[in-house]
Image (cartoon, rainbow, N blue to C red; front, side, top):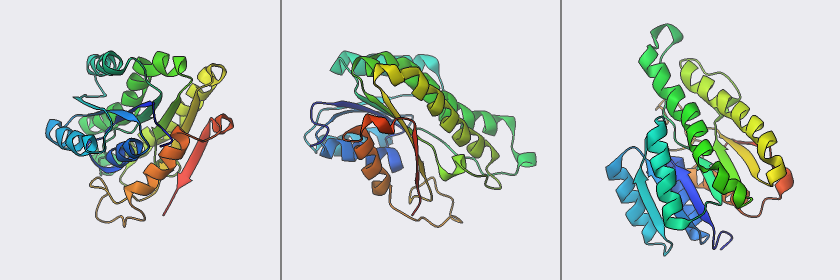
Length: 228
């Protein structure tokens, strides 16, 4: 129960990596606030998580829209009064060559993955700083190298690493740990069929739980490559 008494916030938590992380946090004793755009999947995730005995708040949120993010953050703080761990996981992908990528596709991928991480972090950072908490950013192997047909996704995931590096320096003196996880091919619905999954989402959750709990603060700024 490494997270007993802590409040953990996870975006993009209705499925895949986000849901696996939320499940692990509940197993570690945390109260959990989860957000995602899809109401049906979010409600199903909340029902499953509630069976773990922890308090769970589920609220639809579009992380690319500032007003939606602020409403989500306000709901979290109204329910729990604090936030100890933030996991910025929400993201979408688009597969197309650069010449075939339309502006709408580009904007959606970058706005959800990169802008969304900025907006959620900005909204909850005062609470995280007050708790001397932790911010975990879920990037990808695509944030480390290029992949043909994934220019928007790679740009967003590279950007997340830069954002986390800058955030690390801003909150270091406040005692906040910031870390970035860069998984390889994870067996989730988002993974294109031509990519062979190398590991289950639970392995990413293992790392997230360690970073959220017992990882020494000297690990702040770390970028963890997690390839199956």
